[in-house]
Length: 241
Length: 263
Image 1 (cartoon, one colour):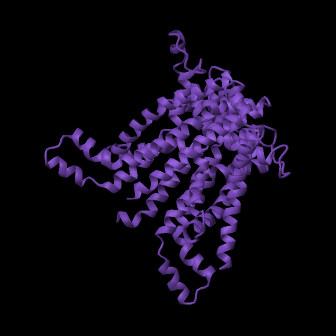
Image 2 (cartoon, each protein chain N blue to C red):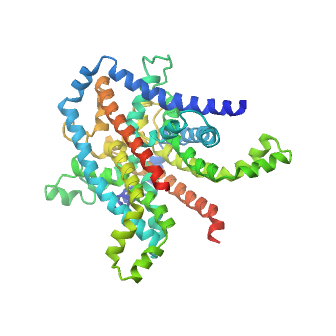
Image 3 (tube, each protein chain N blue to C red):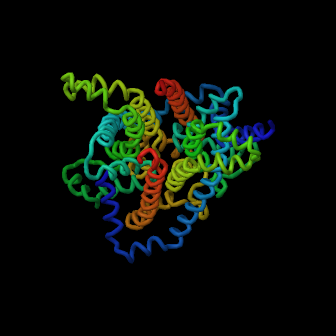
């Protein structure tokens, strides 16, 4: 693992600062990076909200088939990403039965990324919600707090670290995704994300340019891992003391 | 309580729109003309070969990463050494970084102009655009799973039992086989299942290093992409259904194991 990454660093350094900036500030690279980060943030926001809702439903609600729904959540982890892309293409692509044709649009990128990052927030919030004492909420309610106040003052502060760490992991995943995007979004002028852009540069033999853009992605991954580590440190501060 | 129903509705609708409906659609599209054409596309020699490559890569990567994962978890939880935090963070890297970046890194290392390229070329060993590169890429992307599952279990376990065994004269090896391994067994199995799923589904890294030569260096996932690009969607659907079937089996196994872990 160390050697390949060292080789990557080496290749990025070889072309010098100038070459690096040139590769990064190239309009195509800028467009790809902007699109990647933009789409990833939108998707993370969607999944932070809907993931929290889903986690709440899975923990506090009760209905028939709940355990089945619960196990289906992990499907995006188990399903190959290219298959995920094809499934979305089958329903929301050309000759769609529901008449929604999103292939090769930015909406398709958001859809595909929502699919692959679906489990993260749910799986980090769920255990916290299970542990959370309902008595605290009941006490607040008995003192006259409304539903919204209970959620804002009691539930949210408790699950916030879970939402954050799940969101950040989802962000990392969304920034690097390629398999599910290559079929539904493809490499048209306005749907080329960073991973696909790097892939194209490699195919064109421009490994210095590819290495430069890859370094940006790698740096983002490092920052995200550091953030997750710091968050874990913060959450366990009372246990360690 | 209506609020409860609204939230339930929102959550289930989201899951349906994004997850279940598309998946159901692939199954429908695959089998809409019956079983015969599905079987025919699956027995295409290139497709069979692609599945073989995928299985070979998984068969090498899974045992290696299981061993590595258990050793790393033991080192991280039980030992104190310099750079432990770094190792801990490093294991997670394949989860956070794009598989294309992983592929590029391997490409730069083993390519013709890469660090090992000239030496490998001189000795007539083909790594890039051949099976070894596919295996290496698969190993790289599936590194974290076993360690990630085993580390929390080991932490919770503590080492009192092992210390007790040691005072009774058990060797280190005996302690591992008789005490540690049985206690982390389910975590290891869970990790192995996740690793296997990741290996079978890898796309980005393999797409960069495999060269995508039909019937030679195509894995099952690459073959799906290839068939779609060539408008042979029925073949792509058939392979996808097989891969999705495997994923569903993986989910079922995970469901069977999880409750045991909690006991």
